[in-house]
Image (cartoon, rainbow, N blue to C red; front, side, top):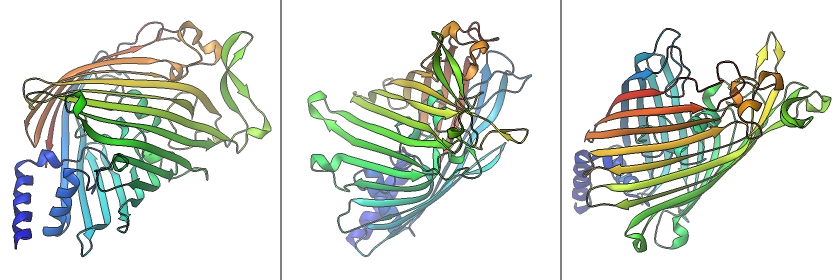
Length: 440
């Protein structure tokens, strides 16, 4: 009887403060080291083990010129410089099965995204837990890749309207199909219990394509320090991680392009060796992220940073991982290998209360580190896919209540000057976003 009363009390607390249990990270579920995980298990146990949640994000945007290309929600139409759109409309169902000791044994999730552009699957995965050591879990299906911080931060909780340019280019839609092993303790007493390892094997191209186009599989891993309070820093909450991605694309052409020194100048050099056919062109990344938040009388001051570098294989026109293998007039196109790096920095400050928050973000993405400025020209085989972009975003977030959020955000987007037509100076593509989010 006492346990039933406790469960009911917890349920009503959840209803009165649903924000405390909102899904902050894409795979942060049924983790009994945090309050959200324990609360969700209680709800599943007492109320048929099913949870339905969702959110919608209608928004208005204005950009500097008509037809501008942007990573702030997709390119604008040729004759439009403003638009209303439904950025996301998510509906999610979670189901957990518990054993006689109230330990999770299996977990199932599916999530759909519906907008004016159609309906798409966002999550379709299951996870099962071992309950002898309470350390291991195995996830299979379509789910978020275990790489980096921003990629895994849920869009409903992220302060900026969109993930950075680098995150979108390297891992569009964030998810892929595969299997992942998680190693972490469900307790959080000893120092080693604050560590977590996720490592998985995936198709590679993610949800940007209908099917896997080669047999090569990508290995992705993240070793993290789960959030903990440091009393020596005034009760600051700290978390950090390192991530790695070892993958590639099998070349279906005998031609590969790389940026190499050619007669003292860097150029995109053609390699037509027969050995390139069925050779795996690299997608190898390494990254590190760090987060720290300091409590205030009302709210927090938070800093986040993440840096990623590596080799990216894509196409001539884009450094984005192709969703389908590139083909022109029935002929397989050559792949392009570029050495890249990028980073982002967040400064978040509550303004006297938890309802008001100031957001400042800087990020850069350099898709080709070996060439810059006026050396980027068509004569040397380069195009706009080789341009570096720097973006400064600032905004204001108002949490009216646990189910209603307003975001006002402006981004100053700068591309490097080059010898490419249309990019001799900065192309006008600054963008303003006004968004309302409803969630339940």
